[in-house]
Amino acid sequence: GICLGMQAAVIEYCRSVLGRSRANSSEFVGGLEPDVEDAVIFMPEGDRERMGGTMRLGARETILKEGSVAHRVYGTDKVMERHRHR
Image (tube, rainbow, N blue to C red):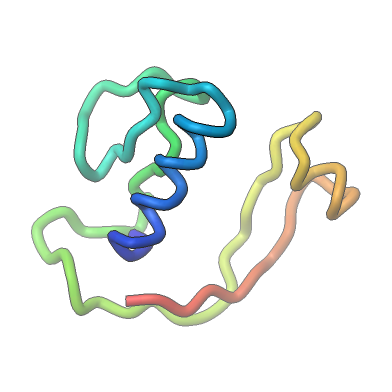
């Protein structure tokens, strides 16, 4: 998944700015309500047994939710983005 610092920043933004007081990361807490509490999701190709120090390189298809800021900015339903993180 994304680094701990970014997860904490996204969660804090959701709680403080968006008013989602129960926002959290699915890497920390299970059973979060989809699109309400799951501010950060566990990437499906991830491995919960081998976390940390596993770099993923290359493009990843991201499906943008209709009506979201990202959908409005990109003007499409799907984008391919390259993210490099450990």
